[in-house]
Amino acid sequence: MIKDDSAFEQWQSAAQSGELEFHVHRKKPDQTLEKLNGELFEGFGFQAQQFAGKTVVDIGAGSHLRTRFFQEATVVAVEPLANDYLEQIEWCELADADVVHSVSAEKRIEELEGAADLVVCINVLDHTYNPGTIIENIHHYLHEDGQFLLSVDLHGETNDGMHPVELTVPSLIELLCERGFAIDRGYLYLPYQRTYGHGDAVTFVMHRRGPDEPSGRDVVLQRLRTPGQLVAEEIQRRTSSICRRIKRVFTGESRGIRRLFGKAA
Ligand SMILES: C[S@@+](CC[C@H](N)C(=O)[O-])C[C@H]1O[C@@H](n2cnc3c(N)ncnc32)[C@H](O)[C@@H]1O
Image 1 (cartoon, rainbow, N blue to C red):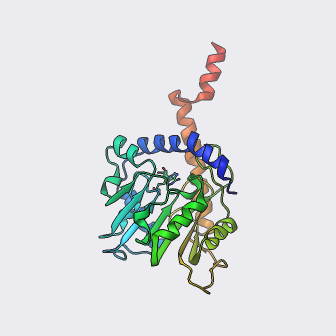
Image 2 (image 1 turned 90 degrees about the vertical axis):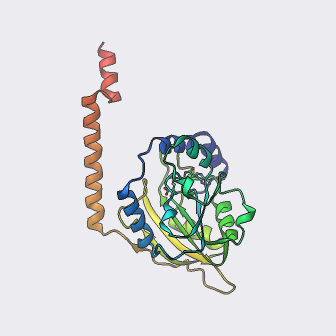
Image 3 (image 1 turned 135 degrees about the vertical axis):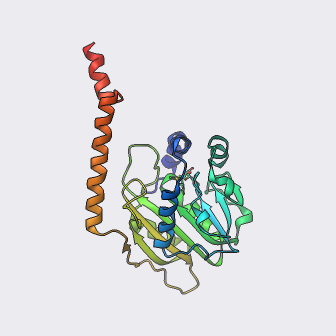
């Protein structure tokens, strides 16, 4: 579940350096990624023109600015590694944001209070160190009619050190409802695959709960993948993993084979 102290240590010592390494070496976003990104927002019920002339805040925006999907919107990115990404990644799409705050989302940004028509937080919350504070800040950033799109992988402990926070559907719903949100709709999986990387992706679209308004905590998650699609994707994932291992053996990149020959020598 959510363990703030150890999460902060892991965030500082391992997660963010791993994150920087990943983004600096990732492939430049291409048309396929843009197409999937469009499918993502549309699958969650949004359209490209919906926030024209309005303000979209992208929390943990990364290097590929997903919220460029929203045409003619003012995009504000909050990304603790923004300065590093902009300095080290030649194509970094944060350069297309209208405003960039290079700070973690746990820090309250006064100028954003009441300013956002939409706050987007995609594949971020499990990478942070204090999700509760982030959700409170987002609540402050939304103006009265604003919407919040939260999408995140739910997984147990991962062994890569990059996911300090473990969430479950009930713990996430509790976190959101306790901090004043009303849930309008929810989704399990993504429109084109199961997960962003680990476990199962879950998504909620919310607004600030008014007095006496129901919280929507009993929301039924709409499944975006069929059981058949999940099985086919799992087979494909395992096949690719085996092919990568075989390739490493033949190219001499396999650590197991190197150790074996090292011992024999
Ligand atoms: C997996 S990437 C996702 C990036 C982007 N949202 C996307 O979907 O492509 C996670 C991002 O969250 C950022 N992040 C990690 N901890 C954060 C925090 N405490 N506040 C805001 N962003 C954070 C990381 O720096 C990284 O860029």
